[in-house]
Image (cartoon, rainbow, N blue to C red; front, side, top):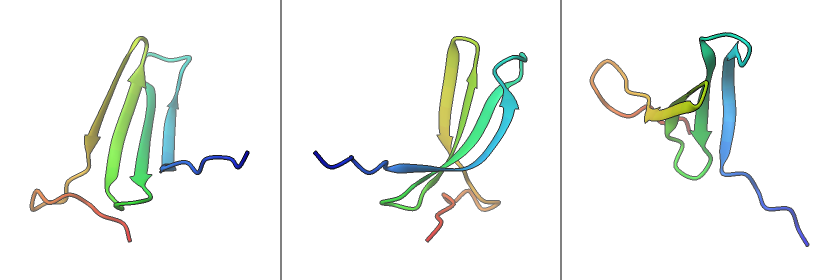
Length: 61
């Protein structure tokens, strides 16, 4: 069976699971190009689209 292609690509990663700051990542949706900030810390996580200075979603082509 063929391996399923991942929809998101990690373009930036910073932080550590061993510290309270957690892990920060920028993910890019390969289908839409939308950039997301993903933050994982302890038992919590959040994800939000990245916006430019005009409030528009950042899209990478």
